[in-house]
Amino acid sequence: KELEWRMNDIHCMTSFEPILSGNLQDMVVSGTATEDIDLSLPRGPMLYNKNWVMDLGFEAKKTLFSFQKYDFDYRYQKKAYFGVQPSGNMTMFVPIIQKQGDSLVDVKKSKPSDFFDYLIVCEVNDEYVGEKSCNMEQSLAFMIDESKVEAHYIESNGVSYQGKKICVKLNIPSSAKWTTRKKIEETLGVETSKKGLFDRFRKNHDDYGFSLQISVADKLLFWKDGPCSISHVLWE
Image (tube, rainbow, N blue to C red; front, side, top):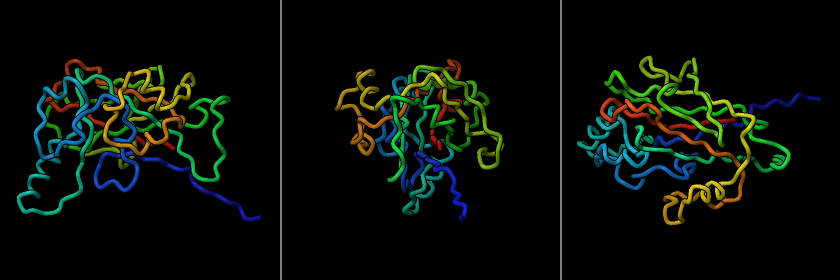
């Protein structure tokens, strides 16, 4: 009998455009703003005092303005969610994504760590000149379900930019439990009118997954030095 071999499915949610599939915005439950505002418009520090802000990094904005002068149809945009300590919590829902024909996950007899080994979270690959710019291991705080988890930089090719590591690994705690997007919204008190503009995941409010909460713990990290950013979430 011929041996059948295949790789595990890898899921990547991104904020970089053009997005062919896997929009990071679809994961967001609460704690973000300005997704519907033109990226070429300025976003001052005051916006960061309430939410994580959808924006372009320093280098990406320079590139965008350079192309705008010549009226090019420039679509590659390294946009991301940017935040500092006053921005508060950004809450995301990590769903179970299964293909047709896969066995259904029995959420009553299992937990997320049975199916997910870890998450990979990446920041935008952009240039920040501040010496005190965001360190994902030290500046950010991560929670999966109700458990704090440590972030560890990944040592590998393709996950650094100009010598700076830009992706961290989060192990899934054994204490994490399944939940639904609807339950997370109810717990946070998210109103229907404030759930955002993106509706693809919200059509399946009763699908199961788990929550990921990200905040900036470093009180000395300032907007002018280079805020923290989130541009990709991956899992298999």
